[in-house]
Image (cartoon, rainbow, N blue to C red; front, side):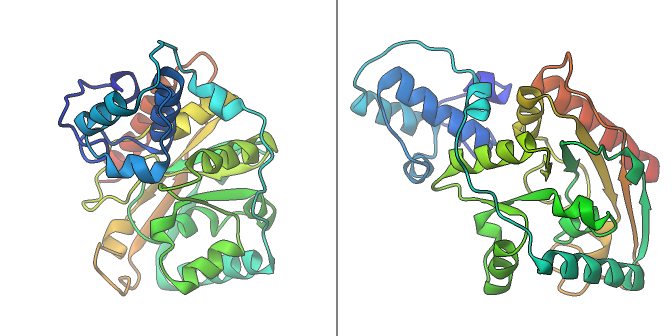
Length: 289
């Protein structure tokens, strides 16, 4: 586990709150336990074993064997699987156009660097300040680009009928942390293999202060395993336009979205990709402050 989270791991560490184990990290852990101990866990059961100590005790009780194998995370991503990707509908065009119009009217909106988005597959990695961030990233792109761009969203955030309807009629890959986690990650990989673009928020959750949070490695491992570039995106001002808990955005609040130069994965480890993307976004946020 220490190799996954780049920190010292203690028995009473909570795998989410202390270790911030992301989706790919959970898949890796589940796969490792099955390979090395013969213990099969699904995501729901793993969620009930919240600490390293609880997982260890469960494995001690249930193990069938022990053998030491090294897990290559890239194998999970590169594995050939038949997955069905969501398809865009006419609502994608309507929703994108309506968002474009609304943002121009309601906010002081500025977009920079759209020319930095490559024509081929890439991972678009924005910082996360507000509920609107996904729309901020795509609203001013070309329709042809939006149709080939997939969002990555946690099921717990698709929590009402309107959001479920929109998710089912747009390019949204929903990740359920209690089941089908591996398939969800493989859907992201399948989209990239088919030349599409994927939007992943490296922080995993929105920042409450507007300051950049810790980046998870899922996007960087995908980039490295599939050799696709990462486009860092700076979203600045969204935390002030729609603070946590606010129901109505501030009228004419300044919003800036800037697409930075792509980061190539060539010659870089996932950790180096993650750190490079973090540094570029952080530097641009500090310049704007």
